[in-house]
Length: 185
Image 1: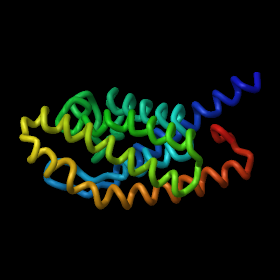
Image 2 (image 1 turned 30 degrees about the vertical axis):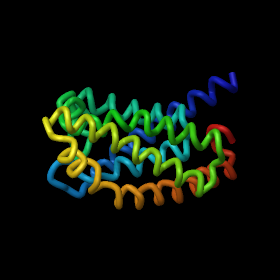
Image 3 (image 1 turned 120 degrees about the vertical axis):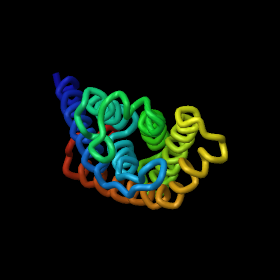
């Protein structure tokens, strides 16, 4: 009974993080092809705080909400057109990014240094998948796809990776010290 209660609690927390991702997705700096959003910061927070299983679950819930029409994607976007359009690869890239970040932290340690490494890895996973998708969906050359969907996001990505690591570890440690359910603690 205790285990099923814990699982239910973590599913609720995952849904809460899906909402947080949707809220931070509305923080947008518009660039020509792909906007810079708070989504990746929120994905990093979810993976850093919740680990691989529940961090990934929060991303999947977020993507499903948007797919069925809830305006949670950047600039209040939603629907299958957003998922399968030119920027959809970035959205789909959040799934493996969250899993890899959480898995890395579970296999190393939930410290700032390891969380920073995990979030930088997650940034590159998202950028590679999103750029490849952008190249195909928009009919771009590789240099054009990298120029529009990869290079401009690296400096901001490092900043967001640092913030997600710092805030994520601080929140995770506080939740653990308050004896609030955190996976692996």
